[in-house]
Length: 528
Image (cartoon, rainbow, N blue to C red; front, side, top):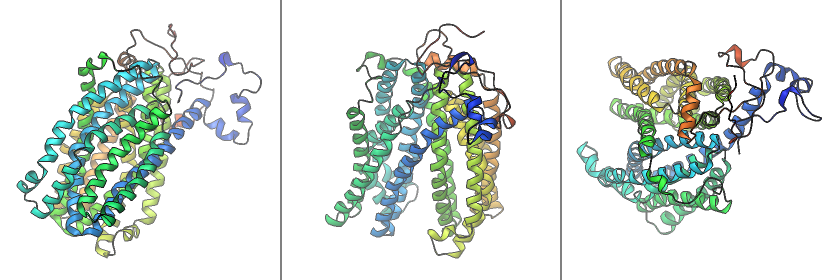
């Protein structure tokens, strides 16, 4: 389990064999240790330890829709278009709703686990399960009427029919997908990452076998592809559920079903609704961009899809860092250690800035030919190259925006993010992007220029909010959510003397006291 505190020697005295700043500085990498204080190095270790498996899990999750896209492409253009439309419909309605609601658990579970009130984690899991299952009903209603909605919007009947087939086949997968996302939040916010990586790997192998059996052997065509897609979600959920029980990962936090899960729905929804909105506002803007690109021209639409695929690949890496930072911030605030939460923010900021520079360098060096992986059309490749030129600079702001959202979610500030996304995306980014795309006739280049402006405004807004955040109050709110009746202070190790590389980039944080207990430990007295 990840620990919020730093169990180093107290009172500045180290026993035999214990690592101190003085002994560490004399080692092989002493120059690095002198530049980066011990508290920051430890936090960097914890963040990277979580990031690795999270990145691998995201790569594995990306493989499933990739397999379906390849299979549908072999079945025919109409089948591929039908799946693409069904995927967009499911993502914008069902997936965005379920994943958004689960963001509330990223706040509640991480903070409650950090506070040490472990049985309350199980109550939150029960409450979340009931609420997510209830939200399956409106999602089912949309999917059942998918064909009628698409025909009313002028979609081709053949494509609408295939979309409806996929949507209907996905109905039993909706609760499985919601519960699987809840399982991920439950484990991830306790610092347990490897199970999702193992089960995703097994599920991908099964998915390939299902597609081969249903399409090649049983010759079910598009029906087989739709069934395989649904079965994958169900199998993934069952595999992780079985792994949790097999390894007894629930023992410390699960006290059995309780009537407490029927209470505090209001406080849950205060976080869940803004969480769903902030995610929907984010996902919808990119779907709108694809819609506008389709209106502009077929080549622009193809270039837009290639750009979105590249964005997905880049996000796999940064998304792992963002999730790790969110977990660490939530754990620290739940433990009453606001100083540790601020250190996490600083480490995440520098780490993501370095990542953004690396990703920008990769874009700059490959922008002229990377699109040839997807197409041989030189016109589309040229368009993608122009868009990537904008993204070289935009990637820096995009990484910081996502990191800021992760920090604010860990602190339980989803409402701020939802309002900011609404204003920045739809009151600033969308009008500018539309004007550049159609009025200035720049195509999708104009669209991404508009989003670049939006990202700059978002970055400035979110970073300002984070640096002006009352961390002490955020810690009190976290402990209240965790069911703590009195303020808990988790004291951390006194940071080593000397300036930090990180401190030259971000503001100083208050100096922590001397010793930090493990996660879940509480100290009844507060520091003066």
